[in-house]
Amino acid sequence: MKKGILLLVVATLLWAGNYICGRFLAPALPATLLNTIRWAISTLILWGLLAFNKKNLPILSKWKEFLVFGFLGVFAFSTLNYLGLKSVSASQAGMISAGIPIIILLFTPFLLRENIKTKGWIGAIVSIIGVIILVQGKQANSSADSIVRERIQGKKQIPIFDICRQAPGRATLAD
Image 1: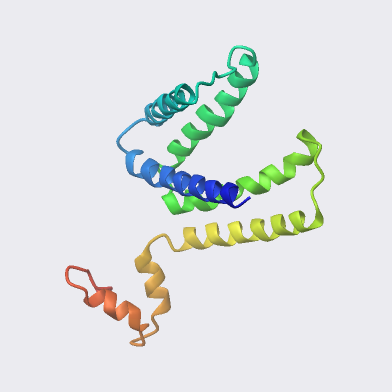
Image 2 (image 1 turned 90 degrees about the horizontal axis):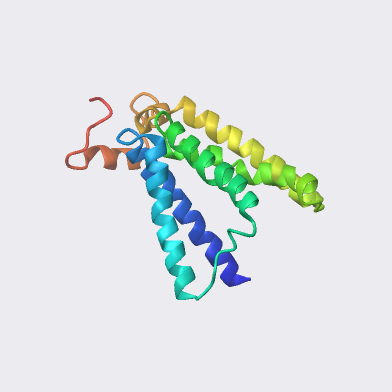
């Protein structure tokens, strides 16, 4: 189980990097090209891993499933992400995507016929509230400077902000 958790943490870190790279590259490349490049690289790596492990991909026997899931889960999802990253920060996109487990939880009983325990539903409600609070707060305070300004009352300042403002090459809040 510990190995599984470690793998999921690494996958989460890689996914977070996807939002950061997507935000960085979104203004420079069309979303469909960015998506194609990303998945072409992933495909080459996957084929290399399959060849190394001497395994075959069952794409021919399950081609309908691969086509539907590939379009929805890979092409449409990633392309919509990259289109959204043109106008939304990477952190906002990550917070919005925090709702994905909630959607999975909502559809699991219907599609997979699995029962969700009460703790799962309570966790989903807390997650939904958290995502809403984070996204609303991020939209209201879209820049770090505005967040800092809200915390400053008159000349009373939080000490860490004084240190940051005095760092060489850093602009002050008054600038």
